[in-house]
Length: 271
Image (cartoon, rainbow, N blue to C red):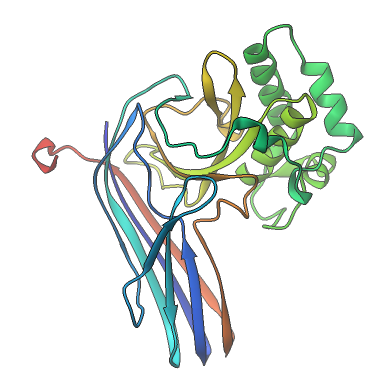
C-alpha cells in the first residue's frame, strides 16, 4: 500500500519566546515491509537542522530558534510504501541489543497488578504469551480519550481501567519486561480509511521473540500492525520515542494544534 502523510504541528504563544530548541523524531526508517518513497521534515531555524541518530536508532533533527518568535510550525510528510509482514519488523537498523529493552522506566514500572496480569497470561510459547497479554490489557483498559496524560504511569492506567493507546502500550511493555521479554514503545501513523480521521501520534509496542525478532502489538486495536501502519520511532517509553520534544525560554500562553492527514496514495507514478 502507498500511504501519503502530512503532519503539521503548530505552537502559538501569547507572548514572544526568546529561544526554542526541538528534537524531532519524525523520519521513518525503511525495513522489510516499509519503504520510504519520499519524505521531508520542515522546521524554522537560523541554521540547517542538526541531524543525528540517537541511541535507539531513530533519525533525529534538532532545530533551534535564537530570536523572539510568536509561533512555531513543524511539518513532516511524504509517501511510504507498506506491506503486511504480520507485525514482524525485520531488517531495521538496531544499534543496541534487545536486552536493553528490559530496562524499567517510571512509566513502564510493573506493580503487583501488572505482574499478576503477565503471569496469568503466560503460555509455554512466547508469542502466544504476548498475544494473551495484549488481549488482557485491552480487556481491562477501556479506550477513553482524556482520562490520562503524557505522564501517566502504566500501573495507574491499569488500576483506573481507562486510557489511550499510549497507556495500552506502556502496560503491555511493563508486563512483558516482568516476564523477562524485551519490549519497546513505538510511534507512528495509522491509515483508517478515507472515511475515517487519522490518528496523530498513534502508539503501539514491539516485543522480542527469539527466532522472529521484533514483533509489533497494537493493543488498542487488538491486532499486530499491518500495511495500514507507518512506523516512526521507538524507545523505552513514550518520552524516549516522542515525535517532538523540546524546551523554550520565555513566552507564555502556549497553544498547540496538531493536524495529521493520512491517505492511500493511488498514483503509482509518484514512486
